[in-house]
Amino acid sequence: MGAALDNMRILYVEDDARAAAEVQDLAVEQGATIVCESSGASGLLRAGMEPFDVVILDRMLGDLDGLTIIRRLRESGVGTPILMLSALGRTVDRAEGLEAGADDYLAKPFEADELFARVKALHRRATGREHSAVILYGAFECHMKARTAFRQNRHLPLSPREFGLFRYFMENAGETVTREMLLRDVWGIAFDPQTNVVDVNIGRLRRKLEDGFDTPALETIWGSGYRLLDGR
Image (cartoon, rainbow, N blue to C red; front, side, top):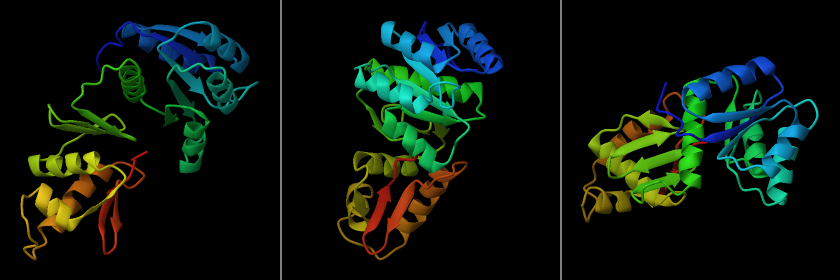
């Protein structure tokens, strides 16, 4: 298990009593105070009336569904980070949750380590404790001082050259990066030496960014270059 949850106050809305108890016990072991609500209505009321660091919300509840709860909380001005849990793990389901106002979305079944890593990441971002030398884009994190990279809170074992490429893509997140830009800014070459050095290194980076994940990380823009996707 990872580091402690730093005395966080967490609201967990889950109508499966056994699942709620398991998460609660593990969270308490890590130093968190976790309040459990077994219905959407009670969870909505509690989240709107009391301060929490993070809300963990099941999507499919017996009375109010999680999407409705998120929308009502956001409409009422509650900005607490929300992590949605659901057995619905398709891309379209994740998109619905994020568009409704969730800050992160985790498909069931999940490992406790990943759940709590995501909770800690949401809390860091919400409290402004991310170091200025950290670039965030979608599911990716680039820690420039430590020269480490993460996707969905999982460490990516990049070589120094691969990290340099990753950092450049993060600095230009969502934009098309050309071969000329990479040669100039990453390799320091002002002309195209007509080698496949870019292609080879992009291939290695792509494999490490995508290994173990269901969605692509780098998109090839034919005739132009490459673009980093958000990794969700």
